[in-house]
Figure 1 (cartoon, protein in one colour):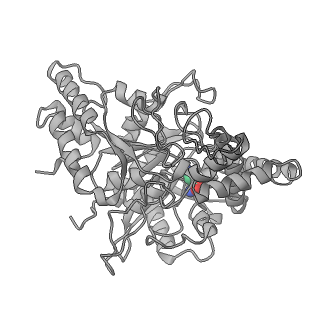
Figure 2 (figure 1 turned 60 degrees about the vertical axis):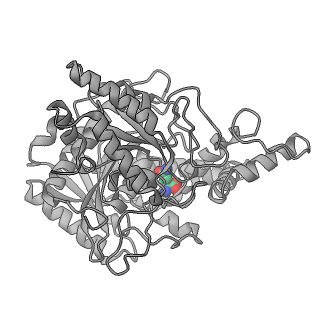
Figure 3 (figure 1 turned 90 degrees about the horizontal axis):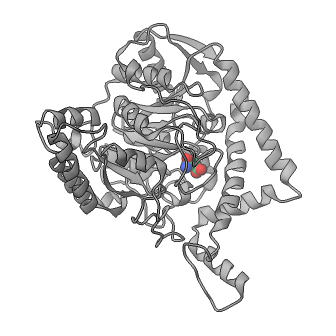
Length: 491
Ligand code: GLN
């Protein structure tokens, strides 16, 4: 029999309904995996007691025939989502003792449908990073190992490295993530999982620790496209508590997953080929095109002429918003306070020096600079204008196609320790994910195959605003062709 930790959510829901196993058994199997794989450092806080209690409630509902949509499904929660009475650190020292008195809307939506909380997942501090090496709680380790050196540890992507590694390792069935510039898609590509960021506004941001508010979007990591659709149906919806959440209905995201992709027009942007990109990325991209074609799609060449400016634009706007959002951590209202016996200014300085890691400080400094009176027009306003041009490129492109196919990342997962001394190299890993973020578009990464060295490679699909159905439909078509079945740990 398949191990319980190998099941997808939709398979597990079938098993629970037909009483093949109980929610408590399913949860216990994931708790065992969480303990077994602690060395991957996926969880900042484990909550097995909460999980088992929730699972017992689920079993009662299954017994009485009143099961909910996600009943008994063990999930990991990225530690950027506030969870009532459960510590929420944002991966930082600043919030190392922060216990929220409220629940984020997205996590509440999941609990309301019977989901089970395994714990709070590791991440780069405040979501800032590409490899989950910027966490106050240590690096996350990718469960995948390369063939040429199985003892070498690889990064799990970032900032949602805890989410991607825990799903890949079977320590939860799916996980929430957040995606500001690629944080669900890129970690998914590095770990052979699905990473899905919906349209900006599809999910509420209420109760998610803010990084860059005009880009932050609740997202997820799952084992397959159907699970991604199921999860997103529960996570999304209008929330009066978030004025940027869209007052539109949530469609049935799973409805189109059964059809083939006949007639779907898939755009291939010529600008998504970057200097020095490894040939394996070009190869897998070509294979993806061929797969969608084989499934009945029509491939069209498109152009997104401002792509080249997306990365610098993102790295001006995201730090600008971060510098403003993170001004709230002043040692007075909540979080860490370092009182060094000096005056108020000295307390601010000591608190922020100790509470924030290097990458967070770097971004606060860049953001403060680009927002300062002398440079505001030259950097911040200019970047806002370029952001609009990037969105216009997509609007033009979608006159010719329904979805866009591109690489997710410019390479597979890299070894732990690599790129760490060079922030620019880290930022370059986001080159293919930030354009959709700047344009607020839904995007998804699907695992395609392993490279020659045994590491996963993924491809990204980008959809029209609020057209997650077509995006998921295309992703399902690609997934059916790719048939990615490999598992880490050589299992
Ligand atoms: N890697 C990007 C950054 O460092 C994106 C992170 C994210 O989406 N949270 O900002």
